[in-house]
Image (cartoon, rainbow, N blue to C red; front, top):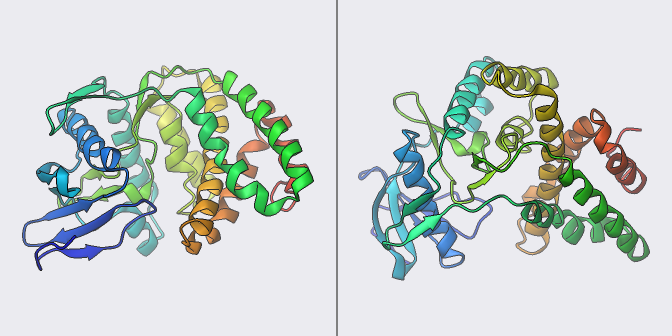
Length: 316
């Protein structure tokens, strides 16, 4: 697809989308000829819900769904990831601002909105089956590359059983707006020093702990355990009605499952899509799994299973 010369292609992400920026119009074209319902229609629907709740997200400027693109507001070039990469100090105040945005997101009650095709979109629940299928990406893509054939089937059977058991031990209901990719690469600092959200198309109604785990245990940006704890405690301080023990249980489980999923996704990107740069992020995902899995008694059996089969990554 060709656009006017004012639109310059910009670096994309791990999806099938392409992005083109027009600095004169302060706009971005999102082009998607695959998964276009999610990447165009649902993306705009979620953006509308966020904007309706006074959360900064890209506004729709124009659309040509037949030609596989939408034009949206450009929130800016400066992500929190880019700021952190340049300035290593004083990151905690920015994390606090991100938590304040997360708290605002978690108050969103709208789950239904009319999209630009004049159809209603209803945000779905983040059911345990979805969480299970996501975690199984670890089985499908990573495990066969690391274990011999005889071990793969045995491991997968035990792994599936253990993940189902862990999902049954989650305390919090699916009653909260969950972005699902709430991390520093998707948080933009605009010209007014406010935080805006991008990559919003995967939002579901799920567990309150999920987005916090995405932010703190972010595979793309390394932070110290002491900073992780400070940010976690700030969230608790701003949510005093939460049962801290039950929340920590859900946080640990969801963080581990999310990072197992991410390892599977990164292996898939490398093998299927030839995007091998993601392989270098896998060791840090393992490090965060190891960090969380050793602190929760409900994760003991999963720890033992991973320790037996992937001893390089799990501390005894």
